[in-house]
Image (cartoon, rainbow over all chains, first blue to last red; front, side, top):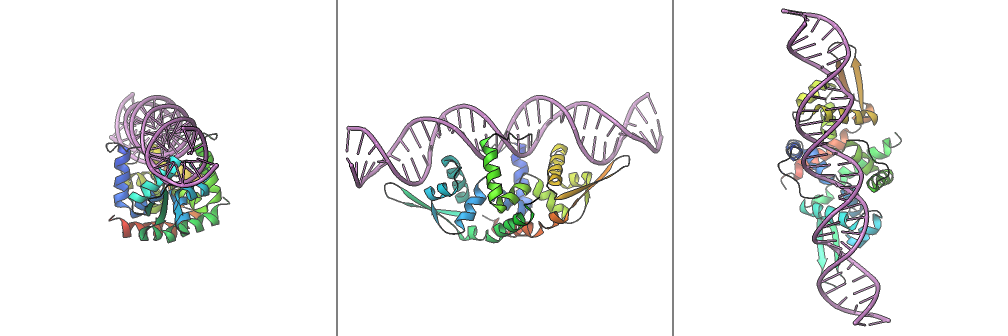
Length: 117
Length: 117
DNA sequence: GACATTACTTACATTTCTTATAGTACCGCA
DNA sequence: TGCGGTACTATAAGAAATGTAAGTAATGTC
């Protein structure tokens, strides 16, 4: 999760596919190690940074920050900062984010059904 | 797409999440640059290796092979080899693979709806 | 004044994913 | 004998994602 090289073949391929296939577009947004789990939790209501950290025991703060920023940039989550000390920041899904519910539900259903191998 | 290091934190995190969250499990299977598009095409019927290659103009043969093998290992696609020369190999979705249809449909729907940004 | 708390940031290391390039076996056909 | 077509494999290198470790600001409490 560093800056992407916009001249790479990889980048070109990714954007081309994303442009042509809406399903790939969506997959790219909720892809990444943690984005999907974060959305799953947020579907149940808003959460603070520290609460998310507790729910995802192995995530590093760096990763949590990066993923949240990415989701925010894609208008999937909304970030609200309260000017307090110590700071308090709350994250919640936007309407667009909530729209992911059926997507996540289907992913979940398929997973439950076929996880056994 | 090389051998994964089973001692890495990354690997541990991924498998743990995959185990706990069926939605992540599913996402990991159809994740990767090309797996989802391949499935999308195969939803419409069986295809040969060379046909897939034509449909995905920028994929390298290596990537196509790797992804197909992975999908095969996960029982999502079935591979049929015809003992001819030149060789002919056909790929089609298994019933489990076809079960992905609603998942892909939802991904697609969300993408179409929100692609505009 | 030292310390704790929260939500980060920064620099760097490691792992994983993707691309590039070349090569293989098979056989029929010219 | 050499060429073409198919579906690969091998090796290397490049890019991207993830992890590790440390540090920061602000302020209220001890």
